[in-house]
Amino acid sequence: MGCLPLVIILGATLVQAVTTSTTLDDVCTPAYVRSKLPVDNVYPGITISHTNLSANPVYNVSTSGSAVYPATTIDYCNVTLAYSHNGRDDTVQMRFWLPSPDKFANRYLSTGGADYYVNQGTQQLPGGVMYGAVSGSTDGGFGGFDVGVDEILLLANGTLDWQNLYMFGYEAHHELATIGKRFTRNFFNMTVNEEDQKLYSYYQSCSEGGREGWSQVQRYGDQFDGAVIGAPAIRYSFQMTMHLWANVVEKTLGYYPSQCEIEAIVNETITACDGMDGRMDGVVSRSDLCKMQFNLTETIGKGYYCAADGDVPVQNSTISAQAVEVFEKILDGMTDDDGKQVYLSYQPGALFWDAQATYNTTSGNWGLDINSMGGEFVTKFLQLLDIDNLPTLENVTYGTLKEWVQHGWQMYEDSLHTTWPDLTPFHEAGGKVLHYHGEQDGSIPTASSVHYYDSVRRTMYPTLGYNASHEALGQWYRLFLVPGASHCMNNDLQPNGPFPQTSLQTLIEWVEQGVVPVRLNGTVLSGVFEGETQEICAWPLRPMWYENGTRMECEYDQKSLKTWEWDLDAFDLPVY
View (cartoon, rainbow, N blue to C red):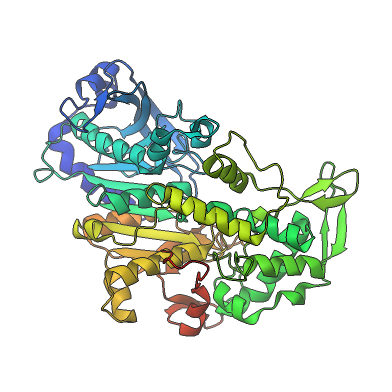
């Protein structure tokens, strides 16, 4: 945080000449906002409403921070705008938080969504304002900022609303950034010509928001100067069907471990693999070494205990061989009926939530709890039925999952798949990507990001050797695996691990000052090391501690890197 004020002051200096003594009260009015709306053809086929808008100043708002930005206190102008697509009876809402004129640092930031949502409400917006950026989000035209695409995906059973689908896939964010950047220029009286006065444009989000970020980088090379992309839900039909993999494994093997037993296996894994990186801190920094050296059968017979919780009685038992068999099959990754690899899987030490079972109070047994994310993807996106989840997994086999994956891949390759590996336009425009993924992500497998990164490397640098291609790609695209981290956040089971809370600041310094993030700073957000800054290695280097866990090196380890490679041989086409 030591260099944060410098970054903001430098940016603010650039714009003082055009804002002079203007205050937030001066500019944060509906009349002023209306006067600054883009009036030319900023986006073909779109009409911006001059009546459906609001603006009000908000002062001295303090936030305790989040996983993606530290605690801050901000003033901002809260603006909502709306537009429609010509020829359609629709309304798309955008929300912008604009910093006060004296804090504006010539920056614009788009933020994304989560699950089936194209935004996260106002949750991410402070993370832009604190760096002098206008922060924007969109409702995608879905009928409100709290409406998910799954609620409006179908016009009727069997009839997909393709407009909403493509807005969710990539179009809504393209329109948000295009309009948002022009509105930012107008609001702060910047010149229209980018060459005369630079407006730095950024993107930041995680999970579904990470997929949305890649949708922009892959399609619109000059949209953003930089993007912070976390744990992206790319390879959409693979990822969404993957949410059902654990359920089908449990059903096939006939055993449904309780969440208490699952957590016990995970905790035993963490204990066994903690020191493999040379440091005992309760964090599995080297899940690849854990994969090679630790056998889950070692957990069989270990005791576990969970207190009574509602209808679930006290659990005081030992880890069963059946539970370990389920775990091992899930970690082997999705396969078809012939044993061919359909998809990759989670890392050892991840608490994968998809395996959660439900307790039957009558029988006293644990049973199937169909994951709603995966189930709804099948019912609404594949079967086009307005049903929120699969009612049963009867007759669903490993082969069925492959069929669902392939069906969704073909159906949505041009909208949701989001793995286009040729990023040449973005690279040629000077763009930078800071991509991170928690090593113990239990929702989106960490190897998914590694697989895509390697697809980009192989596609863009086919004639370079391994080291040279990583070096070339690392000049503008870097991937960081966050030790012990869960899905888009720190991990309660490994609290001493870092999380890259200041990634946007790091990206700003990379884009605007040329400071390459050779290592990424992470902040320990809980545990005994809370507040400590720890460095995170850039892929493909892996962390190893020396001198009794006091000195960390980022090292090349070919044998362990092999564990991250997945040959998805169930398909004849390449899976990027």
